[in-house]
Length: 348
Image (tube, one colour):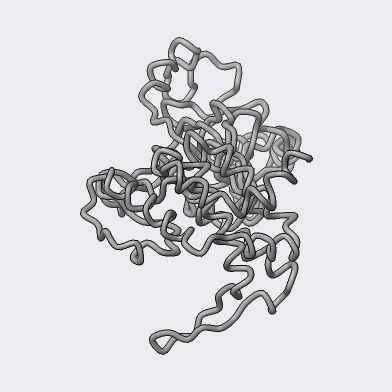
């Protein structure tokens, strides 16, 4: 008899663990299984909705997280059954107003597992790597994946910020609400359309076009590029060298008063990265040379592709940051791009 009782309790405990793994109250289901029958309770449990965040069932369409306590509730609920908070639109309005709003660049990264709905994105579990929401557009890191999607978002659940410096310029989040999709050109500043057009041309750039860009690049164009960098840096109050040589080939720099990294934000870094990829697609390993400096060997673009890259960087400066470029410098910076690619883009 004792064996049967112990077996009954053991099976009930198993049902409790099953319930817990399915997002239910494990203790409550253990008690229920003891009172009715562990097998009956297990069958009943298997036939009701799985509330686990890892479940493959469409439970997310009927449940949302309470913005007061973060626990799952029915989408149509008016009061949270966990904390008693008002979850109507009027009740949630003050909570939403207190939540930070920023910008999120959605990279096409299959390794980054996210739970997505029409207007919400969240992590499967609230652990690193976090969703990074930037406070301003000029600090967004695009990385090597392109294109993505740019959103204005609200941080609904913040991640662990304890190990960050004060005012890092971004928030870590485990859940965000999608408020508005923004054009990708916004990543490159108020004149970002001109930069975006150049970025989009790189994917079809041929070797003959790269050669033409190199052939039409003025020898002193880099000086105009450097002067634009110097004006941008000095506007931020940064004491900087006035030497044009110091800014030659610059893709990103820091300013004291803000998080901006260039006159066109991440545009120069993206152009350089995309051009390297295109050069490798066209010429393979022949697109690069090895350069030894300070005892270290670095792989860089060969002279032809580097000149083509410079031509695109210079054009992006003139088109994306005209406030830092004189009229004469603008003609110099855009000469190669205008002769080779501007006409092609207009015909397209």
